[in-house]
Image 1 (cartoon, helix red, strand yellow):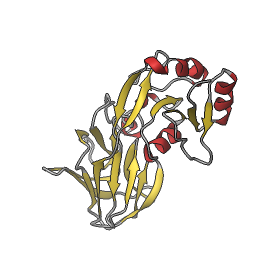
Image 2 (cartoon, one colour):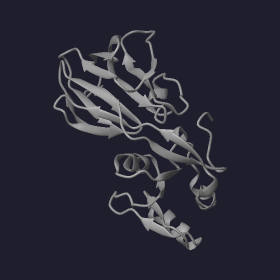
Image 3 (cartoon, rainbow, N blue to C red):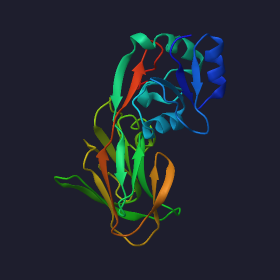
Image 4 (spheres, rainbow, N blue to C red):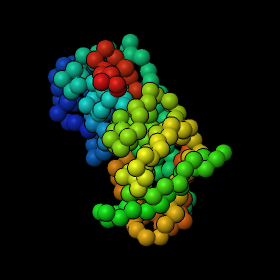
Length: 237
């Protein structure tokens, strides 16, 4: 049977792998098994692995193209090929709140107005410079893994794995808005207008409201290692 492979996000796939002769350890109630290799099914499962302790090699299954995931039907063959996998490294964002609380994001961090048809004003900066100030419904800061997701839908480019981030305004007031590709470490976003409630989302999880003149800052946490095998899909297709 060999060393167990952890499975997070799909008990049915865990049964399929076990029936194929793979030693499996299931993740229960969102917990990530303490195994050297983890099959993470879906975007939420990949994000859960990123937040957990340890440094497993992660095989993303049906988790989008940002991490070159494997179709669910090909998971058994992909697990069999893990010994020859190429490894990609994906950064994790450490998001520090105004009160010092820290959360971690694998895909993206979003500031967005809570009410429809309400805009606010945001400033994005790095440790070296002020990048831009704009009126919009919000702003998304996406990792390279998250760049094919919401950031791309609002006009951002798709990035290959790196420590850079895509910064894109959401429904900006300007008709020709800028989008930026910037080093993720040291980015910050500030709410500049006291006219609408702004909420913070960390990987689509609503974290907390962010008030006028409150700033969130971003640094880099421990990266996630993902496996690229023959069955992995391209991030650019």
